[in-house]
Image (cartoon, rainbow, N blue to C red; front, side):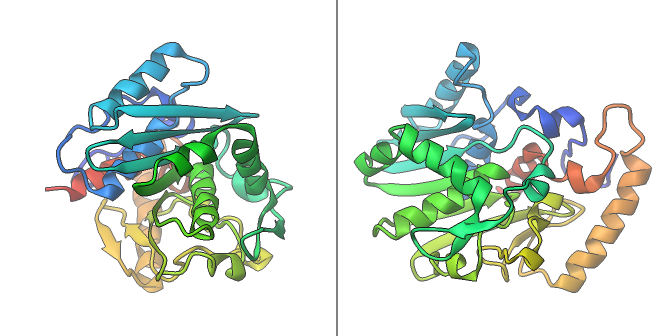
Length: 292
């Protein structure tokens, strides 16, 4: 096993079948926004659109932490849910990530930049998913009707969609917080400028070697939101705000070597740490670890 201070899941199920996860919100009191969002990003993988048991699990899980009103959205392979906590007047919207090979986010033929109405250019594939949900469901109306605090989140593709959602709502004067979990790059520098620090708080989490956070490549014109300030989870599972490139490079090199010895050879493990670190449960474990 890897030398970590808390659990790590290298299994293929954790990466490719995250809807199998159970045991959300082990601590239900005074949840920090970022942990709440990470749990919701994982919960969004529950197949609420096709499995009544998983739909009920998601609804009951949200109710257990005060989000007693929830609604699911499903359109052309795009899914999200929204939930409302009447006590804290907080809405959280969580978008589902890709359930296929995560590297598809970078190699998809739609990894080209197209115009974005709020400014700049964004990934054509991500925009298509966003437009399906925005035009084909009542998600935008639901958000408009719930006027309290707005938290936007998601993992992988879901993180990209939550970033587009943040740009959309900020352009309309809505205050929001964006928490991305293992996000790919979404758009160009002009798009990134639609999410200025003066208007929106952003937490962008990167788990060590997670390959998706390095896709699509900047050579194609893509840039991260808060590119200079990721929240980096190191190979031992500790969180670093403002880690230098030298620190990250050295940490990743050590992580890959350790993974080959400790995990890669196991029957059910993902063969590469760059893939295993993308599993949403490993982000959740890291953020749970941060809470006293």
